[in-house]
Image (cartoon, rainbow, N blue to C red; front, side, top):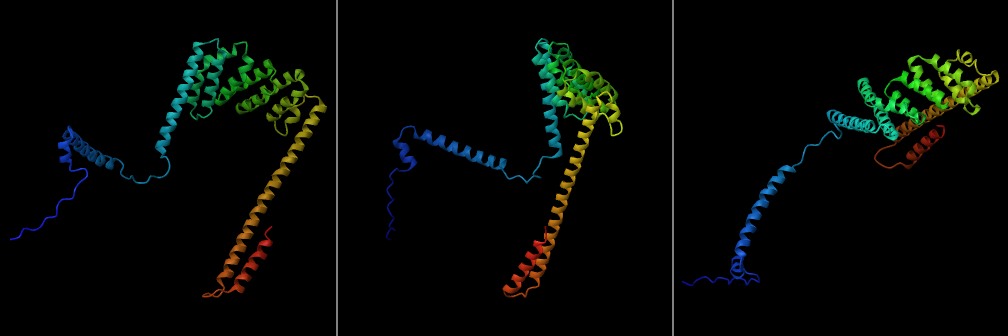
Length: 310
């Protein structure tokens, strides 16, 4: 029986791995390492496939619990920053810059706190810095920062007293208005009025507006004239006339703004009605073919309607 003819093997330029291993010393060791590497890569790929599997979509925003955790972490970091600044200020009592830094940090953080206990704790942290600053030769430079700290901490009595000292001792007459803002919250406007009467004789004319505005903030329409009785009559009349003018302008501006809003609302409603009328007109056009005359009439109707929406 004739043996089937076998096709001769195709010549290989590189030969098999086994053939090459015979020719290249150390190739068997390389092959073993290569096989182990391939197996490890396969296992690693399978493991990563499980790790990077698709996750279900989330709500697209942070959950309430996550927001609370982030807020708590931010609060803890800010509190630690205030504590560190207070410790640095206590370690350098003659460094006014360190005292003011601690006070400013505490004030900025206290303003965002809603818990009175947290505010009180912050004020306690920087109490030594406040005392050091108030007793320093540069107290006038930092007294506004101390008063702002008390305001942020909800200590309106202390804030008002500090603003009043700033106005009296440092001739910072603008502090009277800030004192009025704090003291009226604790029903201490009589103290503000007394301070204004005391400061008026030595207040420069360029600063009169601060004193008058502070009195106005602690007065109402009936008591203002009486509360300004310590002011010369010509100054009082001029100030009251200026207040009346500002009130008229504010009322006129509010009326104009309201009129603009009403006009915009009417125009929007009118154009909406015109669009609805146009849609109804197009819906009444014969269906099945294009009717240019009907569509043109509908467009003209809507255009005429819009022209009256002013």
